[in-house]
Amino acid sequence: MVMRNKKGFMRVLEATIAVMIILGALIVIGTNRSVEQRSDLSEVLPSFLEEAASENRRDIVLIYDTNREPYEQNNGVILNRIEGSIKEGLKNEDIEIKARICDLDSLCPLEPYPLIDGEVFVVERVVSASLDLNEFGPRKLKVFAWKKSSS
Image (cartoon, rainbow, N blue to C red; front, side):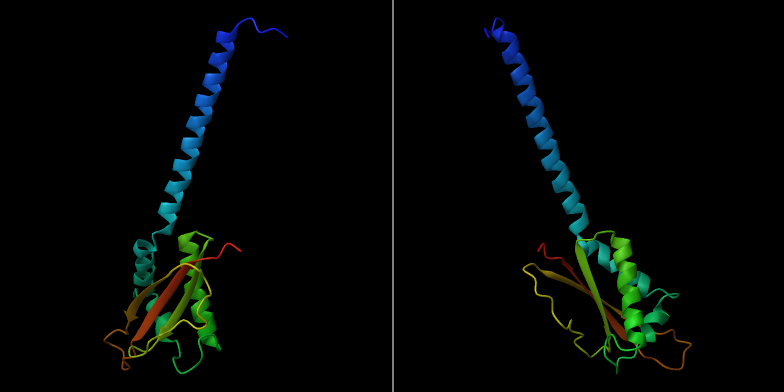
């Protein structure tokens, strides 16, 4: 097979390489941009805590019994409801969420602590009752978030 038109072949080859370079750059830029948008938890999570402290949702946090274990009886239902609403709002399956509710003077730790290589982002908010209620029992709502391990 003898090549008669080497210039035409070279132009087709150059155009193919140029298209591959441009597509590669677009793919790299596109994947970096989507990761940045999803991973900025410091802007997203506080809005979920504000929503949990709003007047129509704060009762859920205030009925939590701090004398019981986190997932014992109604406490588990409350924590699962809070964690579920945050996960639903985040729309990111790569982020794991755990919530804890405790008294104001308590440290409110996450137990068991996740065995991960990355960082754990923590945000907290104080939720208190209205002034018209007889009992003043403020609670601390603490949310822990981290990226799931890729194993």
